[in-house]
Image (cartoon, rainbow, N blue to C red; front, side, top):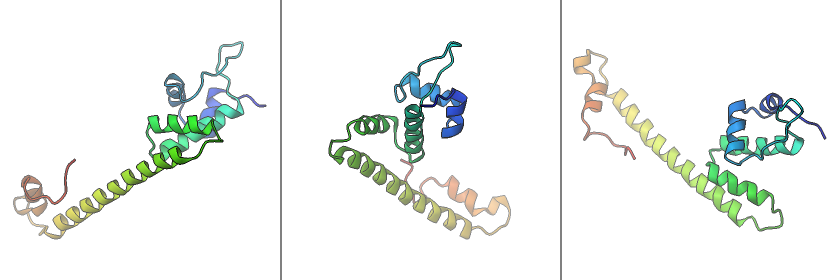
Amino acid sequence: MQDFSIGEASRRCGVKVPTIRYYEEIGLLPLPPRNEGNRRIYDTAAINRLAFVRHARALGFEIAAIRTLLELQGKPGQPCDAADAIARIRLTDVEQRIDALGALRIELKRMISECTLGNVSECRVIEILTDHNRHSISHG
């Protein structure tokens, strides 16, 4: 079994050192043992767990969801219904964001297409942004 410093854990997993400390503070990573110099020592299991958390965060999972997924990972004999539900919730969120971005794209294209490239006094972009009743996307 190989031991790693916090700097090496950071490099291997692509997670900044302060983020690793934060994950320890909130319980996503167990507090690591320390060497004689009081430096943190991470084993392969800790590196794998950190990589799991980083990947989950990259996919946009919230901390609470990651905590639940880690708990489930520790109980491999359970059905995966709970993990599936967490992923479905995340997928729904992503699809809603994609829809909102699509509406934003349409609005921006409309603003640009109405632009005459004249003076600011005639600028449709400025006019549309000034007219708060004229937008086609929600700001929720």
